[in-house]
Length: 256
Image 1 (cartoon, rainbow, N blue to C red):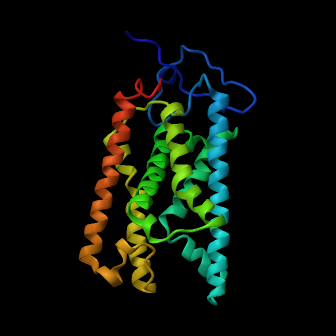
Image 2: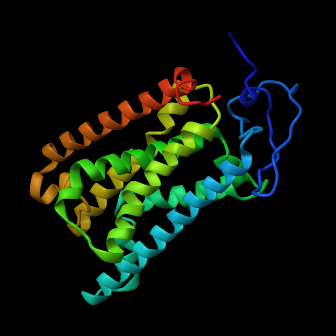
């Protein structure tokens, strides 16, 4: 038994706000991938509010982590710019910035090119994939290395647990299904691969590597590249899982 899919019946949707539901005629042509943005959503108020919550937590976590990092480097006699450089060395911080910007675009009205870019289902799906990957990697590989307390524990859980879980919930229930393509999916790899290459380059000059599994000083390049290959394989598996859910698992997860 089949039914109409409102996500595939419209090309453009008026940006949703917390105060009203989006409304579009149901007879518009099926969208192309390059132009597709978030169409009519029956629960648009809920989706916008959840996106706003995720954006707020992301901005809070990023701001708090920035303050913590800069304070720490100043204590060691370094500068604010050193703190910014150290902050940008971590994949978590860069990814939470993507989350903050992306979910802000989903939560707030706006028809500018940046907002329209982040409203494309495949773009927000990529951001969610990065968030989930960061959360899994931290909880499997890094959690046992330190146990923060108090405010730092709150920030840490916001970065590595709360935001990834909420972004996954948002994706399951509110991101429209999209037509995947190999070319578009390969673009998802630009961000993590660029991070790896830049981090190894910066580490070669400064001697600082943000994560122990890519510490060339301790492990050497062969071991680091092997670890990176394992992480890349894990990310590819995550990508594949999201694409499978997008294609065939929506009914199971109540996605339309």
